[in-house]
Image 1 (cartoon, rainbow, N blue to C red):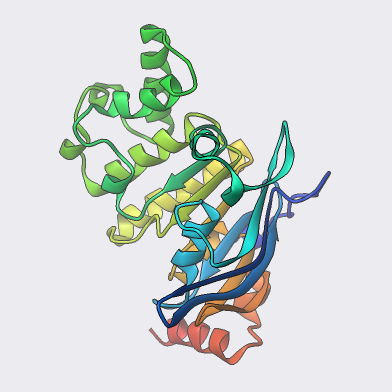
Image 2: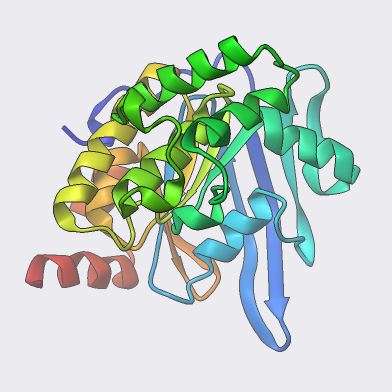
Length: 268
């Protein structure tokens, strides 16, 4: 069953994240041109397109890793209501990224501390929220390694001793241990063998459903988007050319570019 075949979250308030008119250029080259959308609590939004379409630039602007030239990203901070995330002080941005959000990189080495143990990678995210009891930190780390199918005997091993798939699962545990409301994912299955991808996708789908996470996932793989995303945005040359429920977009694409993307997969 695809993600889009499930019932979408029913909004009981406003959107969790709002993007309005996001624009970004690198020199004379436009990377984003007026991108706008809302993301609702518990919704998984897939962003697809070929290399250079602007999808990764969009993700990095949403996550405050990159500032837009124009436009606004607003987040529904529980204690404060909608806030402009790019107008926050650096300390507030760090707090947001530490406690409310997660970011799963394509290369897990970019999201892990490779010189400390797997348990420490997970535990230090909890320490950043104020947990200091060593026994509780270790128990939570072991619990989350179990959730991502890593045995307790690997708790004290360095991530460098893990396979690529295990490193990615460890990065997921590091991000989800703080129970964030929103997770950004940049090609989380990229570079992995097909069998490893399938196992990771099953794990991600299970955890997203169990935790009720809102997710923005960037991928070039339409099969990944169909499996995980409730809703899909198709990007080309920095613009959103088509959006809608994932199955509707992929089974009945309207824009010629989306039709080309879908047909290229069918012919592969």
